[in-house]
Length: 125
Image (cartoon, rainbow, N blue to C red):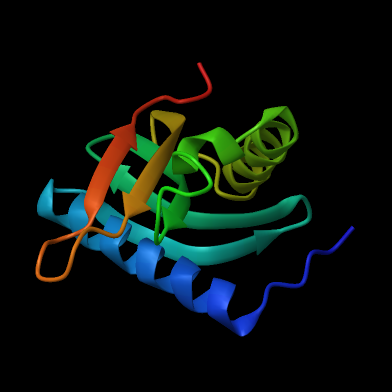
């Protein structure tokens, strides 16, 4: 099943992915791919830190009215993330010694403040 996102949701997603990529880069990660499509779905960001490939699901919210962004990463999304990561690893053997799946949430803050970014490392362990 393909979900069609509204232009507004796409813009929010791009905003969150850009903020997450900048955050990761500031920590020394190298961004390898953005919005990579696999047969199992899309991977928001693929990054590398040292010998580890990091698959990143980004969840962005403009307000807290729907709860924290991480609650939207349920079992179905987790299964898709795992399948996408495994597909990428099979297509790129030997690219890294290890890999993991992280979730990064990005929440808009009051005007003039940077977004609140929370990084859940190895979120599917």
